[in-house]
Image (cartoon, rainbow, N blue to C red; front, side, top):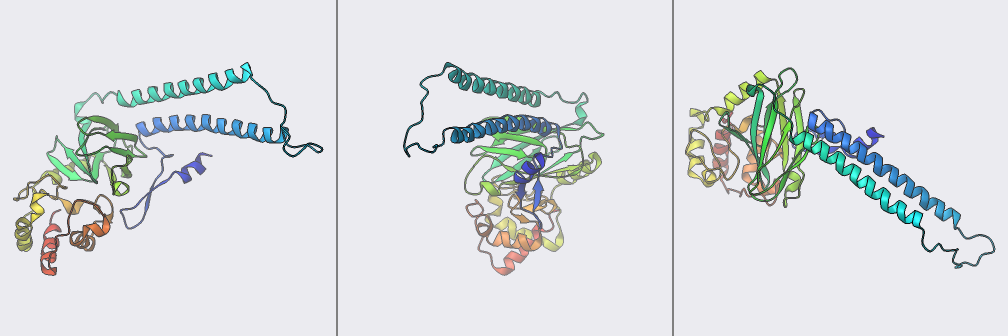
Length: 337
């Protein structure tokens, strides 16, 4: 039964050359496993209610069917008032509701109040900020800012746990990475939190789970779980300023002369804005536009030329560049690794 439900509830997430699947019935972290147990209990109870109600309807249709010799619209015998029936459909639903409330509260409390590991050096803190329609990812301990891709160390064999501080820059968003943790809201002017402990390296797909506007469905996210040594190398590279490649000097000068620097930051250059994603190491990311395109030179060119074609309603305008200017900008951005 669970395999059939898993097939129906698989989350198809684009943003790569092939579609990838995040299966909510195959949890790979502690919070998601706890929430799956709660989901199974809820589905079992509601499934039993469905079967009982369906059986009663079928029985009633058969028991009070029109019999030979009865007139077509003759009303069957009626029952006016039954203390037993009234008690049953009042007490049983109340008991079921309180059982589900109790189980939900216990699991939510267990997830929210999880104690960090004893050694502080194995706890990673990440600040995740939701925007319309992309994710800002900050690593305060490393001075790193990136977008739409969260790199974390795996827990297996290292005791690493990643804690998220969740914020919103505009409307309510919601973080949901099905195989790692359940839905947790990002609310304006309020801090929320959650945590994950992925047990093995891999790419875990997620998305915004609270309707937040036109491109809500394309506010996608990737969690890249790495071995601790690989994560440390990634963080060290991300903490460096942008490479000043002499071969792309004209593209950098053009980039700094355009309104790009009013929205984006590239550390080590004049671009220091934070309205849009930080581009310092743009080409180390797997996707563009919060998952709508794979990050390739061709897609990067198309995205800069007309982002509204791929993500209608997004806040990035078409820059109306000439082919030569577009080539220079793309050549420069390709050096940001």
